[in-house]
Length: 102
Image (cartoon, rainbow, N blue to C red):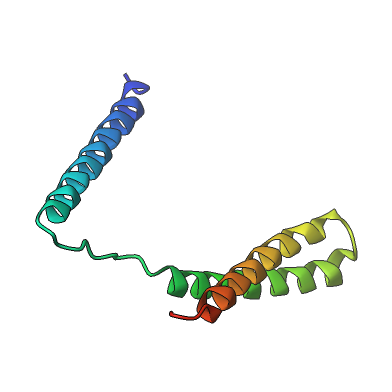
């Protein structure tokens, strides 16, 4: 009985998500049919700037911490990976903002 509860929860959650995407798709298709432009609710530039700054900061702090505590061992990757992701996101933001017509 206890094993059925998580399975039912996952199935019900999946059904809710499926119908959300189905209704959202139908809504957008009706808007396009009527000639209305669907509004984009996600701002990629702001997200990449915020996430890039956050992961770069975390990566720098973790890298410095691991260098001080353990030196140049494999645990340093725990700081270099978020640092690399953050720098990549900030580079993406800079390149995207640099295009003319934006």
